[in-house]
Length: 140
Image (cartoon, rainbow, N blue to C red; front, side, top):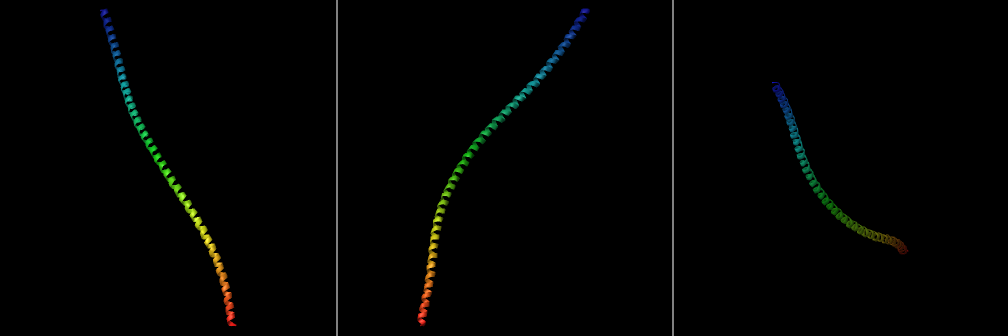
């Protein structure tokens, strides 16, 4: 009977230890499932971030291409505008030369006109003197 009680006690201890080990195993498996879920969630987030990065890189590449195209267009426009400006400056210089020539010609004509007016005044004085002489000769 003593051996039976010892065996029953050993069986009870073994059963309790088995239950405790099973509880530990279940807790560990639960932790593993939670950890696996967390890892899977992190993998999914990582994949989404990689897709976002890829999309952003694609947008960046497109924007860089558009910027390059705009820069080329702007450079072309600046070159055309500089060409138009150079032609306008040349035309302005040519017109300025023509103006200066015309101004000199006008000043020369003005000088001639002043000289002619001086001669006319001189002739008018001579005419007046001659008319006085004629008038004085006629009254005699």
